[in-house]
Amino acid sequence: MRPQAAGARQSESVGNRTARTDGGEREGVIVSGVSRHFTDRRGNAVQALHEVSLRAAPHEVLTVVGPSGCGKTTLLELICGLQSPDAGAVEAAPAALMAQRDLLLPWRSALDNAVLPLQIAGLPRKQARAQALPLFRELGLEGFENARPSELSGGMRQRVAFLRTLLAGKPVLCLDEPFGALDAITRMQMQSWLAAALARQPRTVVLVTHDVEEAVLLGDRVAVMSPRPGRVVQELTIEMPRPRRRGEREIANLREQALRALGAEDPQ
Image 1 (tube, helix red, strand yellow):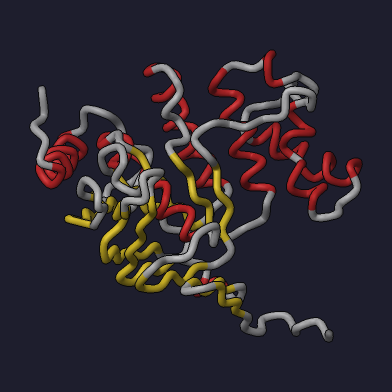
Image 2 (image 1 turned 90 degrees about the vertical axis):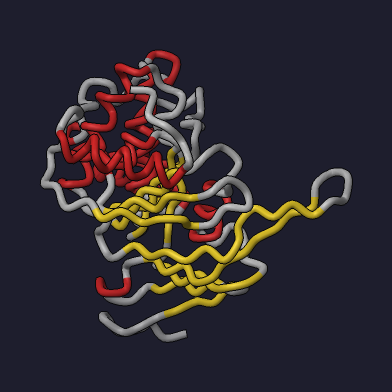
């Protein structure tokens, strides 16, 4: 097979998903009328998603907020090609998934956990480590390259997991509740850190969360989903410059809009 010329268009179809690997204008995500159902252990059909349509432009951060069980993780797995929709279509550039748990291998150092995608792709360990080291400095992990996961704080483990996702080299990052397991203070710190990291290493990002304020702080747009079967009930465009701060009037107003769309009242 002859290699494809630089700049040429490529696409790969898997089920109803098209993965594009061509130029920057295609490094986004388009989900069109997607539905997905499962069969539970009793043989009953469970509708996870119903006619979901949304898109993320290249280098845009799309946050998806909704209650537990509304199909947010299923949506990410569809974008990453780990599942196929029952109806509708997903068109996306190649995507890497960061799961809710960091899934670091306890016997590998932080650096060796981060470079795992590069080694799987065939890059020798020495070259993979050399490629990752500058990012350790850039993302605030310098000095912890040889630490085992058990020696890292929760926030640092999440940074290593994020770096591993970055090093997969995919133009789209799908982040599944990346800070859900962290305490409130660490979570706030990590939200600020992620915004800064994405400013330095731009990617198209689809981030799912059940935290409305997190969705508003991090997203360029927020898609609000209904309870199962998940469907998009509202989209909010966030035009505020970064960095954004809690307590700003516009943050509060957007948070209220999202909560109303979720059918929830703000306890404050």
